[in-house]
Length: 267
Image (tube, rainbow, N blue to C red; front, side):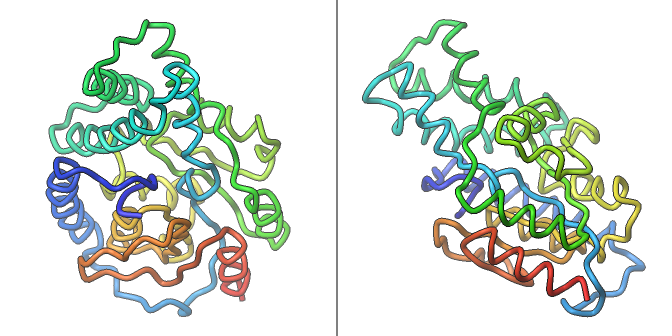
């Protein structure tokens, strides 16, 4: 995936992302001063921080739009997803943070207008509320239980709000598996800003090299890896890797493959 979701990103998104990744990488480099570089395998992994869409299926948003505008769900949702991350990145660069719910609403209104639609406030709320009731990928529950059972400490680390993360997890019965729900609301900076990834080492009380980050998007694995975390790319859509000179430590198409990798790295 070129970004968190499966649709091809627009040029505006790509330009904003390139700017943000440059700024974030510089910030991560500064944060890493004094920390030696490390190859994967040099230390045991004790915890995993998950991007939420390694666990949940973003096509939930397509379904939500389709319920409001039959026949237009996929087209509107594609613009919505693209603009959502454009706004996440812009708000962080501009230091004008707003929580994930507000940004999702702003991006959705843009998408609807772009497609000639005028949703009511209740329709906008219904669509944005989907982030609190996401569908889970079929392989996620068993894989999460395996990792938890192996003694790995688990957390969600996301641009979404804590309430959204908790609600989606509770809705599919996986909430007891997570020790933390780390929303970027805590640090007022969206991923891939290094402050976002730093939440994991702070919450777990571990060194960053002891925390594995599970990324959905290529931009997210570059951000977490630049920060100094071991990183596994859950590339469900078979997207091309980024060409920014940063590679994930591991990669696979499912959470089962992540579980195999992570459990092996506890030793």
